[in-house]
Image 1 (tube, rainbow, N blue to C red):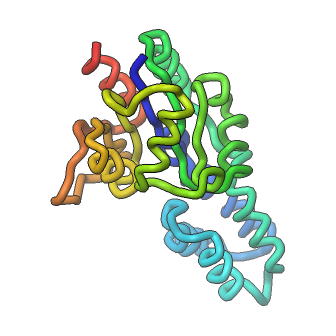
Image 2 (tube, helix red, strand yellow; image 1 turned 120 degrees about the vertical axis):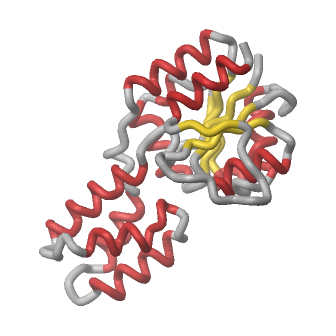
Length: 216
């Protein structure tokens, strides 16, 4: 059974949309202008800014109006209760598994937050397992996290595919291991000159279907 490794945030689920909703509610709750939404989203950088740095920036900006504990609560939850899995993604994962693929989520982040997203969306019932960077002490694009996913699945990395939205974390990581990959563009152009994905897809549903059809 071939191995399919899938990113979680902004690949399987729209993490940014969920976080945007959470920040919008946070600003309204504390009487802050909704114009601060764009600032928070920029600082957060799609979740790639370290949590501590985001917290410090928000406390510095809102400290006189918002308790630091409220900022910490927002970032600890990470909008895990707001993420959703689309029906098309659910169906694509079902087709992959029916076609003999072993699907494993490979995600950077904290175990509590990422596992909450996985269970909240029902992904725990759609994949064969997951690897979270905090739990194993390394993160994408480090090769160890991909090896950990293969070990979890009991499969070799040979013939595996990687699907994700981050050029650095997923595509560069796959490229370093000689793995095939699909970059989920989410409407963005590819901008890296030193490496490229095997394929490009607009969203994860298209990406999964491309892998299935390419390998059939």
